[in-house]
Image 1: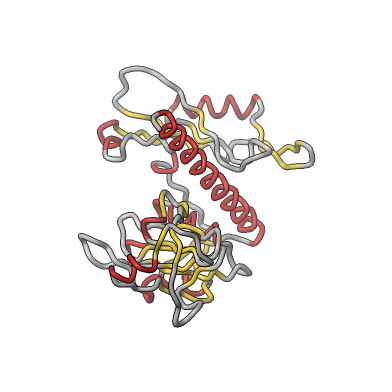
Image 2: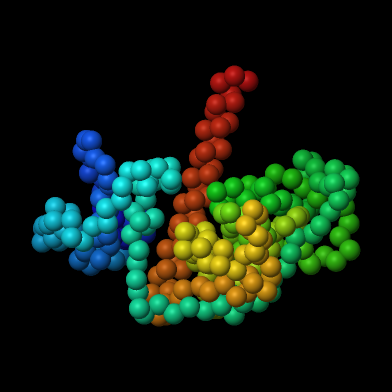
Length: 281
């Protein structure tokens, strides 16, 4: 599996992969070729391309195996045979700085705590002016709110997320992360992070915290072996990688496109699920 450069297509920054198939292998070879490209332009947009010289370089690295990471099939079984190269190829960048999450967040709030009887009376399918988000409404990094709040809030705003806030579950392995796509009343064990957008983008924070490296960083500060829990103070101590201004601007935009693609993919899943139901409805 060869990881190719990003920005090879005008409509997405997501890295494409080149997969080479063969038989009876006891390992899978991964090659990081993200830096193998020539910068060109298409309709005024910068595009990364592969010329003949670069293609020959990639082929030589693949054949020699010197620049590859080889992973045994039995080891990949633990990860459900996921072939995403980023899981196995590490990026070491000495120019990356790290900042505490608490230094790029204006405020951290918590979801409201309701008793079971209050939830039965106040949270319903019937529409109201207030949409509410439960921990289970964060699925695969996407917000999937379907419930509404019918009640009176004693402290409006205290437990509410605004569009663009980062949401992170208080417990988990993995921890659930999403960016609020609307304004919601947050119910249950979910933190609300008001990100300082002058310093970093919410989409970038979400992508990092959802990544393998981000989840490992969260686990460094979580407590509890059976059900890991992260406190507000420990959440603030989590470190986020940041780059120089130009690179960070590109990464912020890339992360925004990834979140857009993620939401669209989930919408397509919902459409397919509705189609399945209609076959037998």
